[in-house]
Amino acid sequence: MDPIERRPDSPVEGWSRYDTLGRTVYACAARQTAYMELLAPYRSDVNRERQALQPVADHMRIPLETLWAEIVDDWERAGTAKANWLPTVFREGRALYTLEFPEGWWVDIAATETLTALDDLFADSWGTSVGLVTSQLTLQHITSDDRSITTAIATLLREYVTLEDETAPLGIEFPSKHGHPADGTGACWAYWMRGRDAGLTEGASVVRIDPIEATDPAYRAVLDFCKIRSR
Image (cartoon, rainbow, N blue to C red):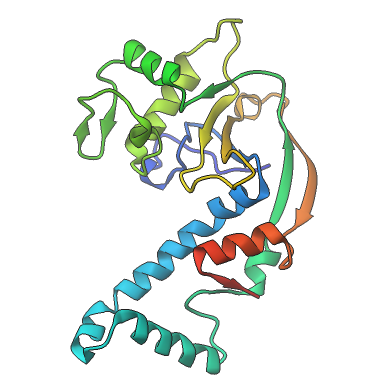
């Protein structure tokens, strides 16, 4: 495991949700959730490309979806891997890692008890990109794309919180903002690599590596959800 080390001079806007200074690795309870976390940003990229064509569609007096379908059809007939296609190298350059974490406890960030405790312990600490939070913390804040607040929450939990058994939390358990599979929880974890950051033996390890198969039912389901195709 070799996540990017976050340093004081790196802007938090480029960090992942619960990154802190040092290294943070993320995991999901189910393959489908992991694929959603991976592929959803590409769905957003495709949507941005499509929406940028709205003025052209208006000028031509045709629906945007009609224009987009014609463009995608042209790309596909020309053999261009573009639009909503992921090339083979995207899948083959990645893998599914099964992780084993050390014994310990996680902070359930979506629990009412956690949100209340954060407000009680760190009142007036929550800055965002547009100013201070003046209301109580909610799920809207903790699943926000505003890294100013989510990384601040993570930093305070990592640096200043000790649990009832006098241990430090392993990291944060949080719900995927993309929902959960019908037969799953959508649970995700942000694990802080305290051992490696301190130059000691790291407690978490990779116990299995599997390729991402184009025929994996979970992968195919997420492609459908995201309206993306993969070679």
